[in-house]
Image (cartoon, rainbow, N blue to C red; front, side, top):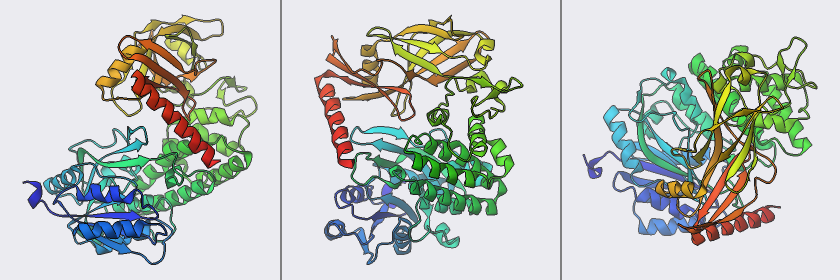
Length: 538
């Protein structure tokens, strides 16, 4: 079967004041070929040139149909519903005006849907960080290519994928179950829609093809809803959307409802907690909102969450105001989680959060070594090595007997890690272990080029600790001292190799590498662009 006789797809593109980007989105949909019978662009009463851009495109492309709303809906749900109502294709695919469909996306989804007679088909999506063009996979490992899920309740972890845009829907399925988005100003409308889809218990087929590119423009004048967290209203909206989704799922299946609440604790709560280092007023409002919502969770759902998520809930319950060591709490919410020193114990010798807030860290002493929230500090040791210190954690690492440490460079865009040689660890006077770990940035740059990373490479820097009992633990590095200094290194291969260590939002060490003069210039320009954008935002 070739694409010319595949069943047809209606692509619904929604746009509001996006004249500069909507043309690229529409073009990517039209470029899917004859499998796309129509592109329905819904202009949500834009006040810029969006309407003109769409009308001019429609005059050239007969497959493009434009729906102009006379009043702005205040959200993304209503224009998507308008698109569903106008659709005539057998399948419906959603696209936002600032994103694109990669070549072959519709073909891959339709082929999989037809092969498995699935009313819902899901494919891979990436978050593309612009202008660097770094692709970060969305929910890697959640979906298995070629898999067919007969009922969502068979895979309750599917509730973690809340996107609507990486899926193809049979229009008859949407009509049969009356599946629509929340109307009006409902932020995170995907949460409710996806919950309604899962509650309808469709067969779901999975393709391994990339079907959606989600553009992330952090320096844009108007960032996307998921990045617009300047006030606590965004978190309030996310809680309300999650509350709606959990209710919908619980009414259809207690298993899915429980999975949705556990997902909130392990994902949503931790993601926003990592950014809690704001002004005290924001922290207080966030803390109150979160405590009130988590208090509605059944105890069984809290117990089903991962250990670090349970400890966060315990801290929320223990105090009506954020603790003084909020930054320490944000590091526990990172991925992988890290519990920074000091380590306090309660009257019975059990691990507690701190002497000031003696909340017991229940279950820590029984965690496998690989799940311990270990902290490893790193400081410079010359131009081509770091000196690390591995902190013990209530004696748990000492029991396992740390033997070696191994640096790991993981591409931030996804891909295979690059491992340095293991180095023997030695006990230090503070009860931890230390080592000097060498690395070769030139070799790392070569590997990055082979993996398709061209002008600028971004790497997360982590360390694996192997123990005498056969266990091991992997974590990120906490940069110390002058480790974050940028360096221009001479290179026989590239002439110059610009290395820029930096601290991620979660406080972990990462590295940008720019091989060659072109790469170095690109990195410097990008830094200047970020600085200008930051000044403009202020």
